[in-house]
Image: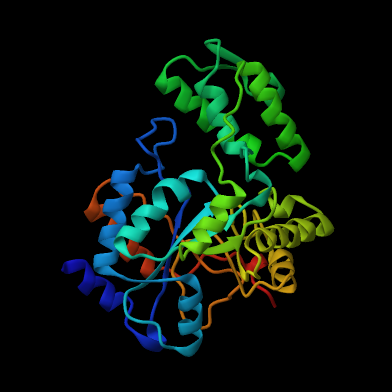
Length: 325
């Protein structure tokens, strides 16, 4: 198979290996036009089958161990999920089991058991808006049309970046106000329950920390950021009854969403690694507290695998200010 050969050239075994760490968030029962970047079950299964057939898929823990030993296999890759959506348990895990693929799930614990994340608040407010226009002058957007699919997509694209980078308390208030303005009640079944997290772990999936409330860490003072990192870790450990040592930064852009201060906090909390969303692949000598991850999105199998191949050629894009002296 051509892609096996391409990946073998770009990621040989041993000390010259390059590790691909792939990001996912949700796997939907059916395609949702308001979140087109999230695959449905059929597409996800096809992608994982391709990965299984072209890559050596490892758990993150095994990949880190073998990276340290210089014994990574050729074409090494890791599948990860962020946030803790219920469809990870209901849809993704059965597919992963069916195909014999390990994965690591990073859990934002504050949303377990009925919570809803800020991005989903934006989507659901726009989806269910009772009027054709939302008055969002309070977000600096004025009157935003939300009638029809194209208008809804455009509204989400305008609202979401603003809400994401609001100070944490303001972001929470914005979510509540969006619900009032749109006249909607948010769903309470989007995120996993504690028992589903335990079932994932019993089912052989790795679980990691993703803070408690998914804040932009760079927007918090140091003590608040420390609390988010440490409390999120403690929450997952309480749910599982065991220690965890894998972490992913919320949002994860180096120098924007987190800094070397937060890398040091993750290390001090007892994590062995921290994953960013800096594009690129991971090789020997990589900063374990700024590991690169990539989210291929190609609509067809050829484009999807070509994007993975291209990412193998990229060194992580870390800003100079985010590289520890």
